[in-house]
Amino acid sequence: MDFNVKKLASDAGVFFTRAVQFTEEKLGQAEKTELDAHFENLLSRADSTKNWTEKIMRQTEVLLQPNPSARVEEFLYEKLDRKVPSRVTNAELLGQYMTEAANEFGPGSPYGQTLIKVGETQKKLGAAERDFMHSSAINFLTPLRNFLEGDWRTISKERRILQNRRLDLDACKARLKKAKAAEAKATAEHELRVAQTEFDRQAEVTRLLLEGISSTHVNHLRCLHEFAEAQATYYAQCYQYMVDLQKQLGRFPATLVVNADSTPPPLSTSPPPATLPVLQAVSPNPGDGTLNAIDVKPPSSGTRKARVLYDYEAADSTELTLAADELITVYSLPGMDPDWLVGERGNKKGKVPVTYLELLS
Image 1 (cartoon, rainbow, N blue to C red):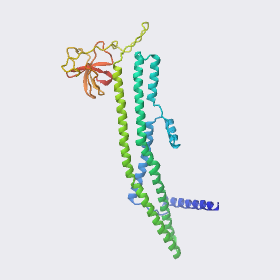
Image 2: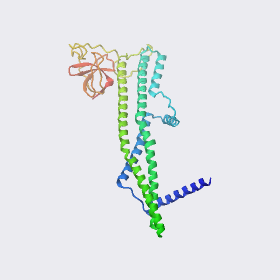
Image 3: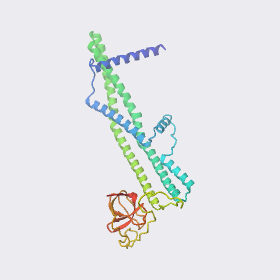
């Protein structure tokens, strides 16, 4: 018990002495051993790496899991070394609700069929999102977290030791200056040599750890490439799912059976939607989407230019294949489904979905 009390008193005395010394250095009342410029650059680079790694990691966590309560829950599970329970994504939950609604409204009705199709796509989007979150957590967030909780903690510990060694060294230098008697000078010189050796040894250990930050950057660079690749794959999957959905929805009838006694309010000034007449291809190469200009003639007025927003692959010979960013001429024919227009590019014509176009004035 007495030993512990003495040790605590000794530690408190050392802490107080170093605090006084550190304060005097800040006020310019005591000399301070300066590190060389290269070492200072290494320290600055390490601090920047730590700070930006923390910011990037936290914002990536927000990106992958916007719900703060869910993030806290996942953090607690990790600290307790327990497996994080699998969650249904918002898109999957929406898809589930749409499917249940379709079953209640009638899966054979136009609305029910559309709900099922859209719901299935939402479930696919949610599954893709979950795969992206899982991949990013393993290949990107985990290496960042390992650096902060592993290498950086070691660096911080060795830097604190180096700081204490420097304070000891400067204290020995101050005692040597104050020593008057020969015996006191000899003792102070011996303590200074020992302190200098310990400081140099600790400085070398810390320097090697700081130079290892370059390897950390290389590792994080590889992880960043994997994160970007996972994100590109995720968005490509989502885009393809939505393209497929639009094609499916384009083949659904646009009209619903309405009670004869009810008169719904007009939704637009466009003609009532109806099934688009089949445009017969007369090209010598069936399936190339080329239509005879005699069969389909543009109206005398009402043609517009349109920019294609996304690539579109024609489903049959009555449709026109589109490439993103190209300009085409479009117009509507009497009785056409309002979700479709006739597109014209050179001598080729065919149906094109409105959702793939940006109509220009």
